[in-house]
Amino acid sequence: VHIGNFNSINFSSFFFLSYFNSYNFILHFETNIELYGTISDQSSLSNRTENVLLSSDSTASGVAVQVSYNNKVLSLGPDASSSGQINQFDITNTKDGGIINIPLTFNYIRTGTLRAGSANALVGVTFSYQ
Image (cartoon, rainbow, N blue to C red; front, side, top):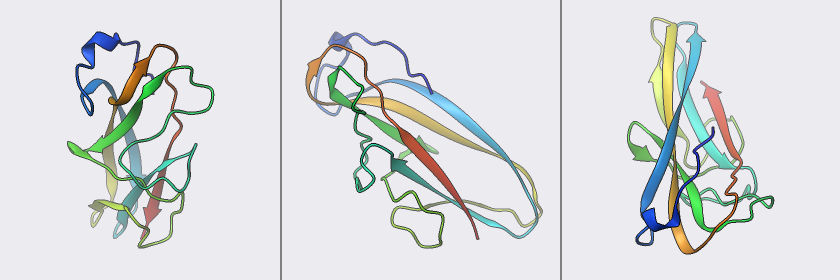
């Protein structure tokens, strides 16, 4: 998901959210499935904060990426689909089956002293069908 370019003047304070983009996952389900999701930091798989760190190919610093679902910032978990993973979030119960939309929002957040450059992050989205 491309968040876009930003001007550091728009990040007036630490932990200030700015610049976002959304991605809508569209999935088709059979009946009687509980759907859960986990967001992971693919550059730091043990990261359990709310901030996805910038990847090693980034030249910028002082920002991270946060992922939200239903206007709630998600904490990161492992890249695993088994039931009961830490920070796994409930998406839906598909009693009748059908198509569901899963809107995720990606934001830059200021975490330190800003340095201009590319700000890339690798976010994993793992779904668990239970």
